[in-house]
Image 1: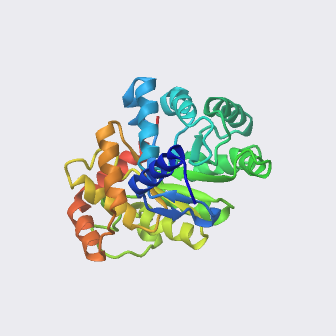
Image 2: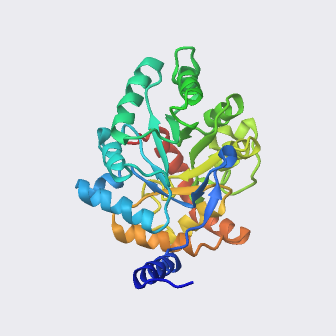
Image 3: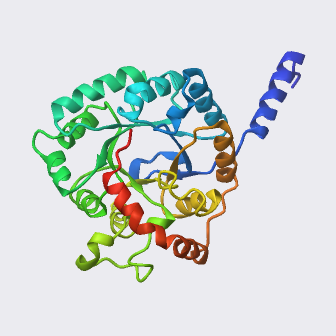
Length: 315
């Protein structure tokens, strides 16, 4: 077969680009049938630290170049600015998995929020999460006849989004209950080495007597896996409260070593994105012994983190 010089150069360039493309491991997002990068780009408070729209959009474009396919925003992040930036950065793209979150618990208010999100995002999200389940009382509001959960069921049926889920960093017991009761596709929960152990590292089983000190890894994660939900980890650095307590690489590797599809991380500087992407591209899971050593190293942080996250509000 004879190729013209132009055809030869185009073919060579394409081959070189394919060879040079970064390898980002992917995992199945539960029963959704979608594979996503093991590193997710969190577009919350850390993303807002880019401050300027062009820099934020450039960070998203660089993340895609590095192989990131999971992008996580919310209506409340930056009072809507995050969704605007994400929408502009991902306009027209079908090769990424887009997640947003809705906070109002009443269906009518939630619908207004979602309509605004659709305009800002410039496309329908793949997944809509109910944002930040806080308690059993909050769950009751979500489950009400006029609550947001029934609305999301309808929106999933209407193909406004493909999947629905919930996020939680405040109450493992409430999340466990919600996952057991309802037909959700995905869940995002606080999973880090400091919040992983039961009662100063003794035992890993759940009992009613220890519910107050139980964790997401022990209570909610097993339910999600049993129901084949797509699980993503958040709060890997515990809102920076674990920064300096353990190497960042170990904290990320711990989260990625759990049975999750992705660790969603806020990366407020391009150098953070580059370093985390390189780690993900070359990811090696921690051994069970290494995971336990890290848990033991951080066990003294657990009680204060649990208290902090009970009142922490994502913004």
